[in-house]
Length: 152
Image (cartoon, rainbow, N blue to C red; front, side):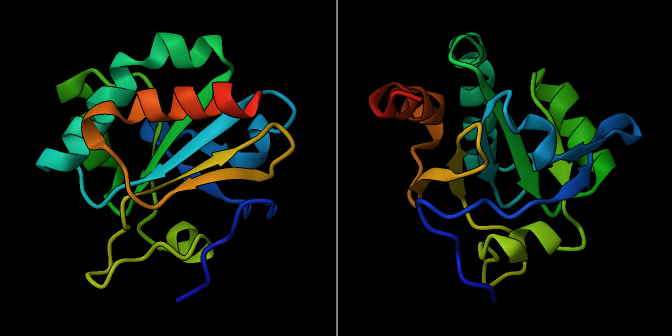
């Protein structure tokens, strides 16, 4: 397993597929958005659903601060699309079946899925904060408050 990047490190780049065949690269957001890159174990499980719905419900406030939310798990595109539609999620979910992204970020669990960890990446691509412990019901608030605190 790779070592997890730390605050001050350049965030590992990646490209991943989302619904509709769209490819998203971390570099797409450099110079444009702060990225809340959150890893989660599995679509449609209680904690992951709470976390995704928290991000969905807080999206207006996050967008006002220039934050782009990206969710990553090892689930496939179809599972992501079903999860997104079921809960009306308003941000991209990235499929990492190859585990390239979770390996690059050192967040693979003992079960082969992603651990619940979020990286806050500034517009320059530098990691500004890491949540190793996430409050699933209020994670969007945690992200918003940290961006304000750091003055990003």
